[in-house]
Amino acid sequence: MGDKNSVVAVYSRASDAEEAVRRLQGAGIDMKTLSVVGRDYSGEKVVGYSNTGDCIKFWGRNGSFWGVVCGCLFGAALFVVPGVENLIVLGPLVSTIGDVIEGAAVVGGLSVLGAGLFSMGISRKSVLQYETAIRANKFLVIGYGTEEEVVKAHDIIETTNVADCALHAAAWQDQCAL
Image 1: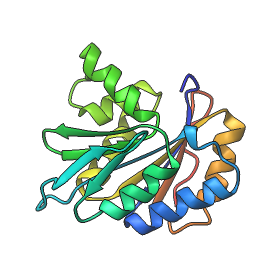
Image 2: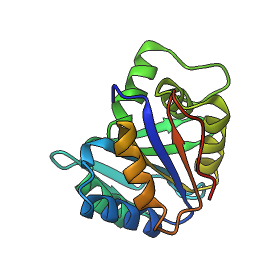
Image 3: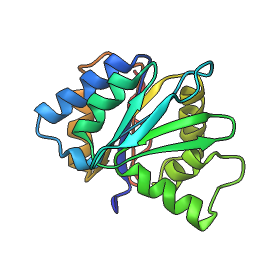
């Protein structure tokens, strides 16, 4: 994730986020450049998870969603985050958050998720919006890469039932407000 270019999409439903991942995969987007973030519902505690090779198997309300998406992406983690509870992260964002935790690089007022996103070059204002979306039980689908790659992913995401979408890079500000 050396590139500071990303596209972040917010989905209200797990099924919509899953459909976005499938469309991105079908269009040839490298699955190693995608992350998905969500949380379990506030009234539900994690029933269980286990490492199944390259992925984690989840049980609970959204277990089948996480299982399907985990099969497409690389890297998975379950973080217990104060204020967010159980945060499920798939894809390269796992190592970024791990680096934040390991280096105690939490940026003032941001959760570990927020600090991870901020360290990727996403503005503090946008990070706060994404943290709010996660607290509201929404899902993030994040693509990383060159400007050309994230614009291609953005164009595909626009064809899905996305609640919000934004491009992030040093060269340009948020350009997509769906």
